[in-house]
Image (tube, rainbow, N blue to C red; front, side):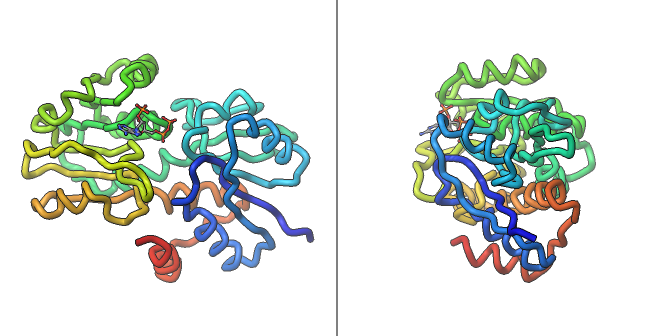
Length: 276
Ligand code: ATR
């Protein structure tokens, strides 16, 4: 059997450890396949999709900033991808159609949402920072759990307004006001790229926070962003995006290979060794 090829498209990709995750599982399950980083420009998306159609590529993940812009190139989008208009997993189905799925919602459900106190879940007041590719998945996963008190804020307010068209129950606050608004929130989610390895960081101080605040960073590389370090020092409960990352990868892997791969200790060690 010829070796199959998988990969992830996005830009930048230097922080991505998706190859380590999928190549670990390919080895573990004796699948002859390789997963690589495919850093591309937006005008190269069409060409990549063609490679899936002609089976040069057997599946791709999609990350920032292409989760939405990739949709017009697909034949159909399913389930959570339809609800969020955000695609992170692409494959060819048995009818020869290019299909887009979203496994981020599953990743959030299995990761972060499992960590939240089930009691009075819908009472939570959540502030999501950022209105990029992953924000619709966060809103959708929270709303499925009955959490509707969701506020979002984004440097470019128009992008937050675009998301509100799809999820009219959310509130928007101005980016300039996040520091004063955080004191009424009990969960903050960072869905911006601020804090990512080799990237800019928050300049805000976030002094006025509740001491029972929960801080969740979608970022997993570095394992502890400056925000996580800062909140941890104050005794705030913090989580990074590693669990979500692993679970979204698990679902992508199952969609492509029809095997639900195990999350074992060796995998966690292999992955964490790759991040600081
Ligand atoms: P995209 O927005 O292209 O989908 P993304 O990586 O999914 O890309 O999103 C990046 C997020 O980080 C966006 O919310 C972005 O805000 P803008 O929409 O205003 O660009 C946010 N972000 C990136 N750099 C930022 C910065 N220096 N200050 C504030 N927010 C920033």
